[in-house]
Image (cartoon, helix red, strand yellow):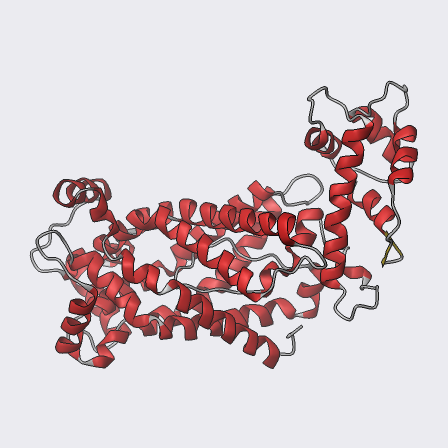
Length: 434
């Protein structure tokens, strides 16, 4: 159906401006074989096939279902026209967004890799890479053109460098978050200012960046593993001729995130231990790994693994859902001459969606951090995830599961802003600016 709409809206990649109502009426008449004033699934599929437009399994059913407002299992002319006009508007917006030099033309390949209308509208989404320190989001999509030309790895490199700078810039707030997650309680309240004073007094200003080294180093392997795993999971899960649907993308992304986290999780444990370390406790990352292995064994490198994996689903799911909802709401309400909302709206959508994702998964993140830190705390009882949650709820109440969320939220806006600016500079430097 996308190809059919495109035929009305574009001719040889040119955008047509004339009213298509007459064309819609002619098409409706051709498809309505039994002349009952409705086009059902069978008529739509048969009619379009006769006109040379192939449809995937279940695609005709989806079109009828999305346009059938009165639920009579068919589209009357009003429903049929409304469906086409809505999609025509989105295609025109997308065309104007992609027509960078405003010559009324765009390269034909831009439409070839797109499986459906949503993928075309989302074309600009992965041009912005936002890093807030958590790597639980759904990976970005890359077109076949980007994969064959090598642009995909340049974008991943740009995102990796942007993430490294962003995490380094917000490391003090990240250390404060971990510090409050582990040490703050009803009986030992730690304020933001008091916590910083305590850390600086113990180890100096440089101690605010403890744990940042391993947090930056793990970006490269995690990004590479997640990207490769995501592509493989998409192939396994995709149906309908290789097309990836929203729920399949979420599943593939979640599984890729879980795969990457499983591979680099020992680095997550070391990051927590190094962040919480006292002066002279570890000389560096390798010394930390050596001492953990000697004292606690291999299993120590996977403490807190279960709540970490469970946290992927609420974080990734809510982040994706909120981002897409905000983006589509903006497109339908404010988009006029272009489908590109601009930097501020993109950053705003990314900030809000990430914050919502963090809010939903934060209790699991806190439990994970406390389990990772248990052995390094003197006199700390080694308990399971369920017991730790129960113990926290009994002693501190529900909000005890949100210890440290203030510095966590405080770092979102600067992290997003820094990563975006650095990403744009890197993209420009690697020759993929626009």
